[in-house]
Figure 1 (cartoon, rainbow over the protein chains, first blue to last red):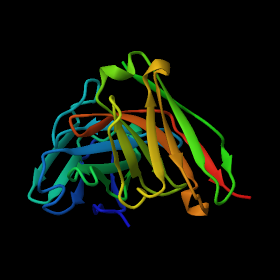
Figure 2: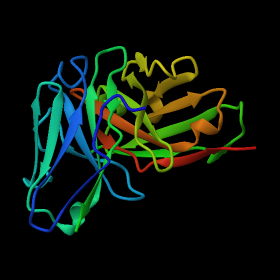
Figure 3: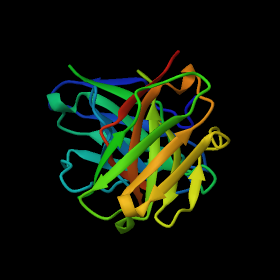
Figure 4: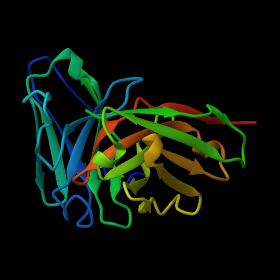
Length: 111
Length: 117
């Protein structure tokens, strides 16, 4: 059972936007500004898309954006493209005892 | 840019010890502070296993702490994972990774380890 909660699936047509939520507690998402989002294509390793709630690493398209309100973080993919179809995982720092917790993942389908 | 590569047996017998090595290239293992192991059972989500600081300090997932040892060998530019008393529930893709500012940012390609007799 994952520490963070994500919807199992989300979808949108090409060009549309999709937003994925990631809900935790005040001990993880709500307590730190260290929420990350990862994209994972089948058979591939996760790829960091967003760090520290809303920072995009070099090379990540600006179609990807992150935000947080209270104990819930969100990833928005704007202008959906076929290659955005993948699983997306959120992660949060959760303190020194168990630093990294993950959500169960959300499968994004481009219709 | 750091590159990571996992290596080790793809099959481990129940009650045995799973041992993996992560080779670091593209820079010294001392150039970054923390190095992690993360696993993913087939078709399931990600689970953080533990991490090691460049000077040897460790943190482990409380749910695995009694069975996990992570070590570092700076002379070989690599770090390793040992997971003891394995069962079928430990069957997963194991990733080595690097952390910075409380973010796991660089990942290896992963290696599938199956626990079976």
